[in-house]
Length: 369
Image (cartoon, rainbow, N blue to C red; front, side, top):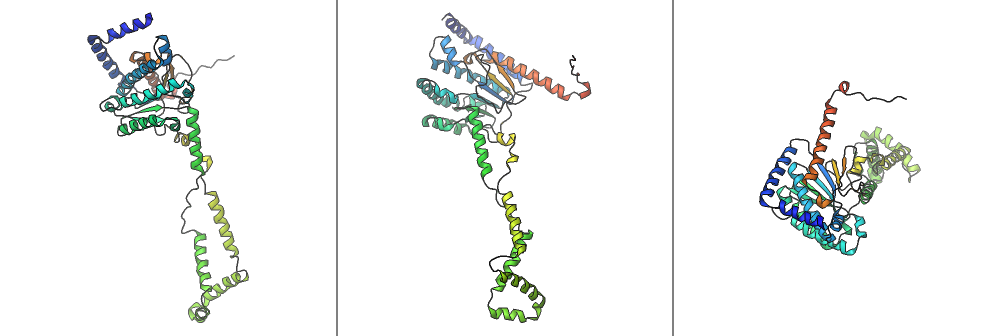
């Protein structure tokens, strides 16, 4: 309880007009300084520690989640003001449905209220031109909550400067399973047959069809054609083909059989997409984050050092993963700023090393023995 009272006193001091004005000016100065260096295009947050914060300070769990949302709003403003294009937050895991019904219902009701606040005209997302995307298993969300989410998405769809991905309800395993299933469905659909009007087989079938139709003409017309002086050479050719066809009326000529077999094999080989063409890039195009910048920075609060089935596919060799000991409601600019400064420092080092000629780079020392 003493810590709670101390926190209230600190909050009261920080909210006094002179201190608040000074902090705001300092924050603007620091964010402006950040913009002069490299900025992550895509940052993801695991907002962990709301319940622990509530227990530590002797307040209701739901109130801890409310304070967590206030922290999120402040961090989003820092991100968008500094130039971050995409922010992805782990709002609700599929595993969270295992919690008490009271807490789950309270979280869903809070989500409706907070989404409505975020998309208000002139509020945070509108000021920075950010649109909302809901990422996850939509079929698990209650209809009224889903309606509120769709409304928020629709109200911000014209904003094109930044993106807020809300993962709810989400796990990486569910995302990858969905992506693989959609890829399999896509590769199970036959490709449209190629149009080849000038292929040899097409020309042969056209000529054969015309000759067969000529053989079925009335005897009178056939007799006239056979006595025509201009059809002498062609008549011999037609008779030879007709005789071969008449010997076995139900079967086409041997050449036709070969051509038909080649066409059939060719169509069979081109009917479906080649599964060997499925690459990591193809699967990435079927993920929820398709078309977004690669993940540059992933931050998790509360001191827990695991990803908890979040963004497993999107984490790559250049993603910085940072685990902080503070709880999410305590996460603010002063905790976030050192992380961004360190990320910028690392990026500068990587850029300098890549720009340096290979013969000028420090040699790698090998230990012998």
